[in-house]
Length: 308
Length: 185
Image (cartoon, rainbow over all chains, first blue to last red; front, side, top):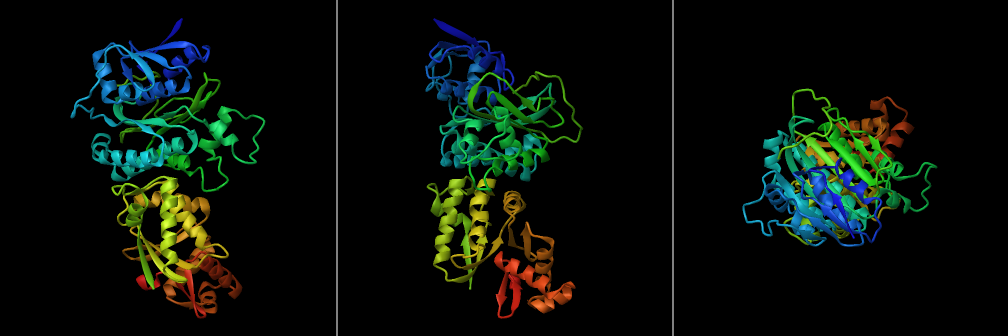
């Protein structure tokens, strides 16, 4: 018997938890159909997390593609199906080929596999070619675009250095209407490899406090810059990302295992730490940088809709 | 003798793709540092080397740690393989973000060349920074002379100069000290 897991119409880092909640009680060898037919919009996080989901299950799953042609077309332009064909049995109609010139101008980096150092060079080089677009659309200055490339490099390196298997990255801009009323640029990086807790546990001679779980591991790594390596120079990547985001009102959210930690700017009302979430292996990172604004920002209602 | 190492050239010699102009990732940084050390080993036992960033688009934190921090650590340890002094050229504000972070984390400092001359930058105790600036101002100074202008005991000035020598931020020439790159402004 096949269990159908329904994917919400708006798929982002928050609503993806619904997918994980449905999967949590299912056995490892369960036959599963991921039903995205009713999805109308997906964030970069939603798309790379769907790929990671397939990577995390021993049994190959099926995926029903979005019914809406516009959605399926966008997913194709974002490079989703090209990656998903390797991971899922796909059901439904979707564009098999994306013609030259059909790329979505909002997709700064289509879904790209990251597994080795060369991939990071490639990803950074490609995002630098889009720097002018970021300068124009988000009114960021040149310094911010360099910092953005550094941030992208560091979060991708987390996969290369710690995951033990490949992951995916995607970068996109969109207008975040309800939450922010401004354009944002979002980096999403996800893998189903070794999560933060297991990575830190592999540090030689490392002793952990009584309260040692996924949340504590995330706090150690993201807040205190801990690393599994003895070298004191390690752990600088995420610390640098935090500094950069602090200057540009950016948001960092990192999920690993059963916890999620967020560095929350003034314009957002996310919780800093969420625990006891449905389990999901590896690490999933989302970086959000808003368009520059002279207007003070305040948190808006939850469940912000977005327009591409 | 002044040597010159163009980091973008070293990067192209190091990574598989000649098109890369970014110093990103730890493996790349480790490989670049290895190539720099090979070049230094061919340059003699006491050298002044310009590390040139002019053609480097970007450096990230991990690569800055591998290339710069570990290079400085290697030649500032008690028994360095040779006496090497560095001047960093072509460092932009964008490069500096990552470089400053790793220097701060490791407690390191370096000499950077700008249009108006050389400057010391990074994590340096106040007494050492003051001593470096005064030696730079004087052009060349003996311990007693430095102590006099700083208004400190000779032993205090000597301690600061020893620390700066160990960090390869000043050179000892006979009984005097000069800052690295002093003739450059």
